[in-house]
Amino acid sequence: MGLVKVAGGSYAFNGPVNIGVHVKDNGCVVIDTGLGRDVARKLLRVLEAEGLTVRAVINTHCHVDHCGGNYFISKRVGAEFYAPRDEVAFIEKPELHVRSMYGLAYPPQDNTVKHLLLGDNCYIHHPIVEGALTIGGHRFNVVALPGHSPGQVGIVTEDGVVFSGDAFFVKQILDKHPIPFYPDPEKTVESAQRVAGLNVGFVVPGHGPIMRKEEAVKHIECYIRRVKAIEEAILEALTIPLPTEEVVVEVATKFKVESSMLQYLLVSSTVKGHLSSLAKRGLVTVRLSGFKLLWSKANR
Image (cartoon, rainbow, N blue to C red; front, side):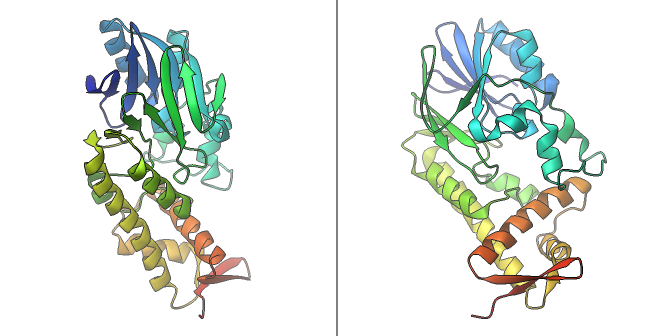
């Protein structure tokens, strides 16, 4: 892991999760903090070796792999923290996001789920919304990119670089995780298209390689095709009425998703998001049968 220059004062700390670093003079603003204290510790060591003081931290969204290092950094440096207004509660109390995937109860735990609990509570000093954002001499544009999470944002630097969070996943990620996590498919597609339309030279996704805008557009098109393919798979499964869990099973099987507690939680959320969207658009119907929600393709 190390700092990679993207353009101007925009750098990325490469790893399983890409962390943005915007440098000006001898200070920097960090964009996302990675998964847990180990990554945060490595980041601070690299920044210290470069003679950089952390002035502030911006989170693109509330998922623990993007804000799990907040607490460690907050205890090591005097930086203030910025995060999307609609996600502050989840970042300040990370267990809320984990519980939101299981009806606010604690989900069953196994080795695949444990990492979701690596985030510690961290105070957010400044809730942010779409628009211009200046922190010291650092100038950014905050772009709303909901879908993967309710209030996710992208951070555009003055160097023409966007740190896009998880607004889209590159093909390599989709090959490994064929059903990505997004509770709102309609907003997910809109946000991915918005990234494709930004006037930037480089895109730094939350996961995957740093790329020029032209290359990112190809990955975004692939991502949108996957979202639509998942919707089509759900409609194909609903030639007969099915309860929610059976729809999840049908779609997970079709896309050959590896069975684990984590994938159950993630895929269930995505499928439920699609079912809600399809019902809203009149493409499926739903009725309560006993204590099962039964979904059917609408007759049109």
